[in-house]
Image 1 (cartoon, helix red, strand yellow):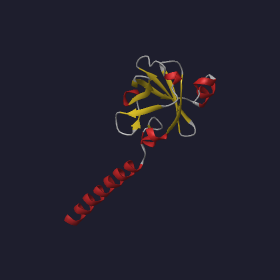
Image 2 (cartoon, helix red, strand yellow):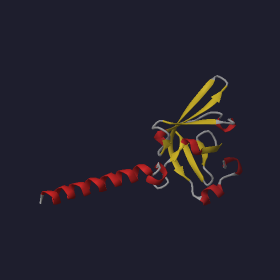
Image 3 (spheres, rainbow, N blue to C red):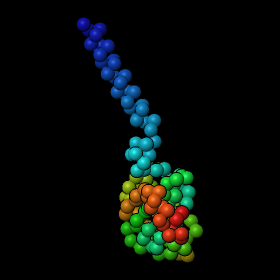
Image 4 (cartoon, rainbow, N blue to C red):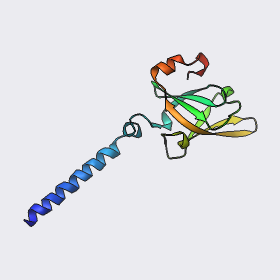
Length: 131
């Protein structure tokens, strides 16, 4: 009887361990069903005015970043830094900040929201707003 109880406890512990290992193996993108991405995978951007920045992530994905306020001259920037406040991934707007260089130093532009665009939305972007 005691052996059966110990085997049941051991089997439960192994199944919990297997679930924990499987969940750690997944990247944030897989865990959040595509809602998150690694900042290191961002490889292009295009500003759409001074309040929206479209960021290319990998080969196929484009995310729309809506800024909390105006970010003057971001549409003239040739490069930006994408900073994550929560580690190395971005899942929501509150996780992100865009930093760009200006004549007087770095300009920090907090992000209000992020959203992955569909292929149709990317195709419909104006030429200058497509990263």
